Length: 226
Image (cartoon, rainbow, N blue to C red; front, side):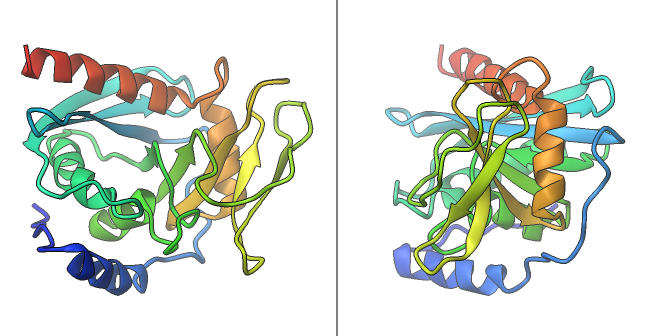
């Protein structure tokens, strides 16, 4: 089991980010889309009760059928600080992943990897701690700029930082529908991360992995706080 220590304050959390970011692997392509297993992870909070629930849903990448799903419930042990949200989520997400009977395969986060002010969002953090290939698919571009991609499914445009670095892509998963924002977490290329996202988003804007993990963690939170 991965042992996670909650940072004492914001300064310590940033120091942990700096240390772990140096261990991100960016030169591996990752698994081919449509093969093996893909696991979506997501969290839901009840801030009044300081409860967080994480869900992990394993899909067959070829059929998108659910292979396994699990949840974990924990306490919120770190304050809300933009750019440091991973420290609120990681312990419970890891508990959910570690309770799976199947190897998670590729992990898809509802959040960011390189598309993060410190280039180390939840997808990178989770990838380094688990050693798994991880990508992030977010609903908005955080603080980065982009030109709107074409209207067709599969069209994309770079998500660009102030220094000109491409930190991710705005990717159109449905014709004429707002794009999602894909970024690399660990052990996968950006091209492949986008290809996986399209393969997982066959019928909806968001990847099926994210949709199912979101629904499961919300349901589990309602049950945990009833």
